[in-house]
Length: 101
Image (tube, rainbow, N blue to C red; front, side, top):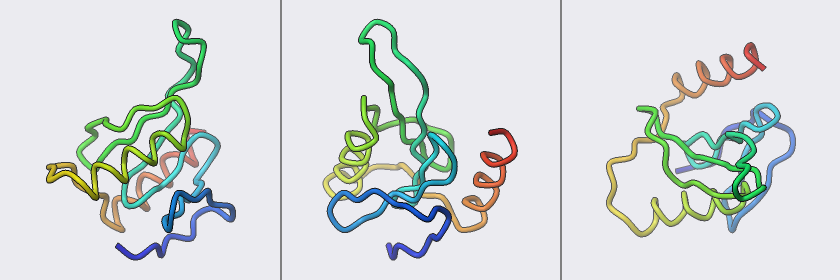
């Protein structure tokens, strides 16, 4: 998939793919959204989660980088039924993030 999203001005990289920042705690990476879901008190760490176009959460990690690595692994190594967002869905989700904060 070509990286053609220009939502945020600063991206973070894992290999050749860039995570595009939408708002604070919301990123678009390889057709999936990765969000900061909050502080996990038992581990005393912040948690991140990627989700697909149907709302299924996967690729849980304690850093954005961990979640991106898991998304890469799911896409590159496994035959899964996780579906990437379409351009139209990306625009709708981006607007939702921007209006809801």
